[in-house]
Image 1 (cartoon, rainbow, N blue to C red):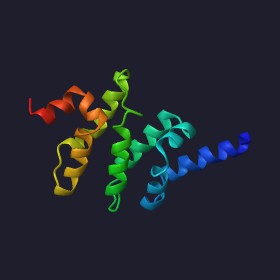
Image 2 (cartoon, rainbow, N blue to C red):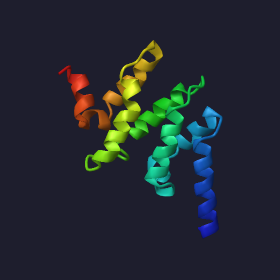
Image 3 (tube, rainbow, N blue to C red):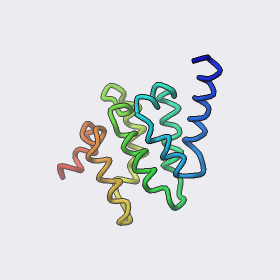
Length: 129
């Protein structure tokens, strides 16, 4: 693949991750995780994920669930990156204490994720300690 083609693919993926349509963003998130992380830098992916999680528009609940699953996966939440894990914790914190019934699934997703089980704060929520 030529360099210009690679640049076009990267730019397109970045733009589609912050598209106005949840269907378009879902299509990108449905790509194999390895493909997404091979094409985009981890910092770029996380920045885009944080942007998605800040959206308050209706129709984005399923997209946010996918983002939270990826954000809390071993691809992002690595044990040896404490600074990144603190950043993730601060981002997911509002989802750990749901104020609406439809957000409970987001809370469960975080607590049962790789990040949730490896982070002392979230694992203590699960164990009740």
